[in-house]
Amino acid sequence: MKIATIVPVCGLLWFWSVLAAPPALALTPLRTVESQTSLFRTMDANRDGRVTFEEYLAKKWSCQPGDQRCRDLARKTFQKLDINGDGIITLEEYLAPVKARSKAKP
Image 1 (cartoon, rainbow, N blue to C red):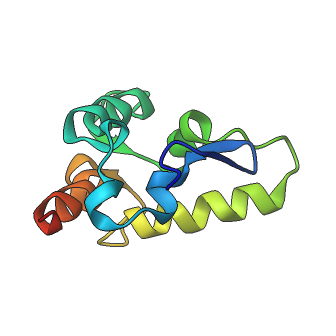
Image 2 (tube, one colour; image 1 turned 45 degrees about the vertical axis):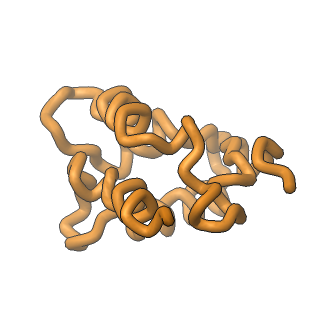
C-alpha cells in the first residue's frame, strides 16, 4: 500500500493518501485539523477569515501563466470546498472533509 506516493497535478503536489487511500488511512498527519487550519491561514492572504478563489489559486496551486487547464482544475476543486456556493471558502468549509473523515474512522 503506497500512502506517501506523490502525484503531480498541474504543478500541484497531492499525496496519494489524500486521493486514493481508504477512509481509515486517508487521515494522515498531513490531513489533521491542525495542519489544515494552518494551511487555511496561509491561504488567507488578507487575514479576513475567508479564502477567495484568487487567494486559493495563488497559495495552493502552481499554475503557469496561461495554463487554463490547471486553472479549471483549481476552480473545480475550489467549488467542491465552497459548500454553500458563495464563492468564498471559510475555515469551517475547508475543514469539513477532514472532520467527516475523522468521524468515519473506525
